[in-house]
Length: 279
Image (cartoon, rainbow, N blue to C red; front, side):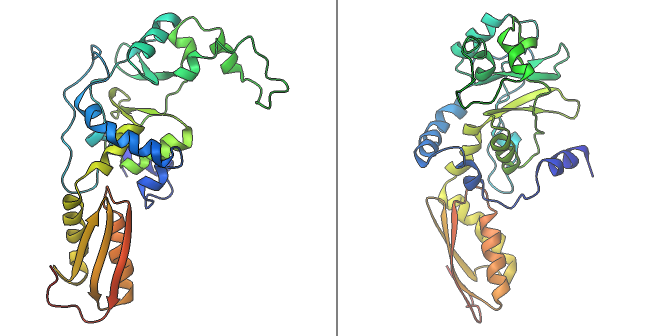
């Protein structure tokens, strides 16, 4: 097992969940719709001027196969040095409209992340939490409130992900750790990109025809090409036709639900002799 596979296995126990259901745990339907609408413009632009170590343009979106973090991540990444002053960090977050920013070493290795919440520790320092219902501040949080530099502000070690990780892995990691931006690193731990929650939503912008064609390919091996008719409307797939066994119907629904961009699968499949061809 490769290092990437070991990393993903330690993060996830179940990769079969639908990405939409994972994401909506942190956003209402209105939030999801608004974010998805904004993805087109977001994908066409960078998140500000690239840092000295920025690489290349965003990778093209795939037409077939499992989507990976590398398919949606931003490659022109703004990063900072651990010596950057507190006020400069705050200014960069505001001016570039970032929720968090990676802190890197001189060699490009990710040392940590500074988020808006980290910077706000100083603002809440004079307000006690006793009687507020909030938990007591940790030693690290108290240190952040006194921070003067990125090194003192950052949360370390940073939660990172590899570029070949499935989108569902990134979604689970973001929701589980309650983070909005995830640094993407190579096997040496060097920053090569960043992925946000909004980036993950781009998979739901796939055209229905593209999703339908991929589902048809996925179920074709169960009883032959054309034996299952597939229609997709707004990401909701409907399967019709006949399959010789009930367990093949279960397999067909599972195969369809695994296609990236599918919101839901509705089965109208019956058990029986498949027709020669369904169009």
